[in-house]
Length: 308
Ligand code: NAP
Image (cartoon, rainbow, N blue to C red; front, side):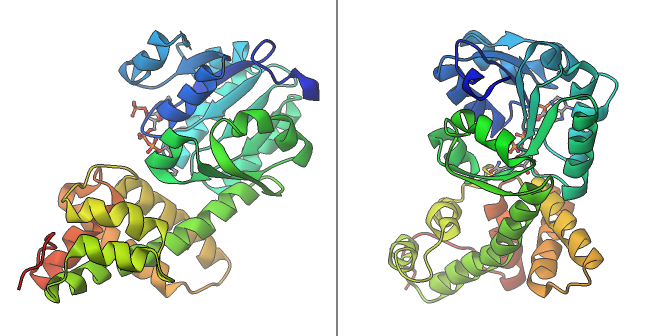
């Protein structure tokens, strides 16, 4: 593929993983006029995209046999491994020169392994995880962090631009995933701060939406208080970003930190709270459900309006 080859006329795009994030991200590519070949473990979750013109393929291998650029947005490192390296995986079907891009949050070491195996068959791999949540996926405002070869990242930029507003090359294979782990380390302690802030506001008898508006536009303002704070106040614990996936991400970050002989106590504490949430059967709620753990600890319930 030459640099000018990325265009709706010339480029066939493959998409694997059409869940909370993958479906709207793939939708942007379809909307831009690209021919899309789609696969998901559960076909029903791809039906909407199929109805909009995407062509169904029965396996990642079949997607790779047809597509020039293949995106994956699956769940866990095990899923990434199966989708790329399994018997019916992308590498079993990929054409010479094709570009495969994993946008799931996964292990830097797995990204490096896929990169090497892709090179061995004359193809290219990038790791390009994202931040910005379900809202960022829907509104095409994701932050995309890319590892792999810079020239390949440049080549597929027109596709990234359909999904994100910050597209940043971070370094060799695995660097995108390492950057995403930095993001998750930052979010982990932030989420504790968000819930503690709302608990304190509730006990102080303040109007919680007013507190979010006040602090959310000041120096303590952040994506989590502005987007997840109101969901907590409304008792809306739907994902968004699933607890199970956050536990996975923090687990990867803790493993990497242990390898680096690095103590990250904020991350470790947040991880423990989220493991507790998962143990209570709430792993498929959104990460804002951390409120439920800290409420229980305090025998309190974060309520919307003034209470005194
Ligand atoms: P999700 O809703 O669970 O979507 C994952 C999709 O991948 C599911 O539809 C799943 O199929 C499919 N899949 C998994 N293994 C597969 C396989 N072997 N073959 C084919 N399809 C497979 O998760 P998500 O929220 O979209 O998150 C996707 C990734 O992005 C995760 O790595 C997550 O950590 C990361 N992420 C999420 C957010 C967020 O806010 N949600 C933000 C940034 C990053 P089924 O339908 O059968 O389950």
